[in-house]
View 1 (cartoon, rainbow, N blue to C red):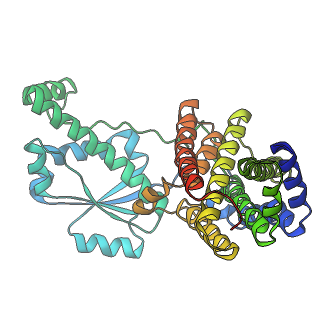
View 2: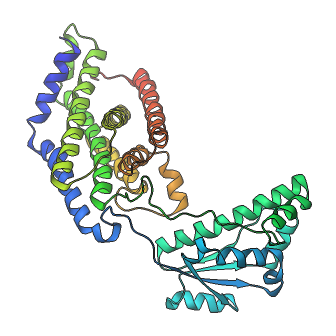
View 3: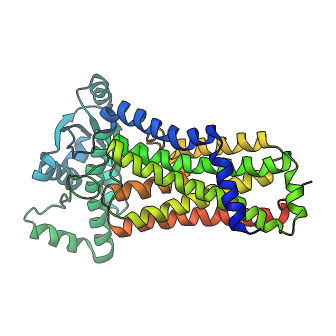
Length: 396
């Protein structure tokens, strides 16, 4: 008996279980359809969209307004590239600005203090203070626009610190202003290729594919515990087959199941829902292989450290749901702290890899996401190898 025989037997055994077939093949397609249809209006249809004009309230002291930084800000918002995106309104106080934001008269607010001007004059890195409005998309636009302004100011401050203030003034005189200027470097476009974005169906197809491929690891958990609970593992170990061969055969069978699941989900979402998975089919195969590896190693870790099938199933399910949630698999999360944590999960890099291909991103960007996914898989594989060496798979 070889690994191949155990692998095929394991695959045939699992496919005979009706509940497993429904959960792994039918349920993800149903969830993609429901989420993609229900949230299409909130997330979009995949067509290029331009945000509405951003109504910005600017609060600044008299000293800040008359300073070179204030003049630079005035020139910045008057530039044609910025003026077509934002509509500026000067506000007298922060309280008035907050009330305008609450009433919906403003979408975003910027505060420039005298301290900020003094920090810039001293050559220190500065940041504008801002107050967010009700629309998350417009908040992102506002942050992007005014971060561009402060980045240019900080660049000029760095030049003045290294080469002297005369260099900055010489550059300013070439611009014909006589003042420090923050020239806008802004272009409105969708991620990836121009005119291309992902729809709700594409987003949830990628998210659900990653999540349900990880659920294949749960079948590995159940399979390993089934042999122990039914005491058939002792019989297998009595045959002239090593424990490693038995273990590897079971993992290989479940790996084939996960890969088969990925093929069905990708093909069916493309045919039924029109999901465009991008123009790199071999990279999609590579991503699916890495997710399969992560699923199997995670299942191995959970199975070997758990005392019973029930505890292992609960632990595995909890890990998958938490990773899917913090990576934005159910709904995109805009909290920076959560986003940082999600970068340590399989789901985050799998989702980013799929979405970058859907958006037609550069091969370098796609490969970066795949490399990070591979790094997470390598850590899980190393942990699984260490635990298997210490615990092993045997009947006790």
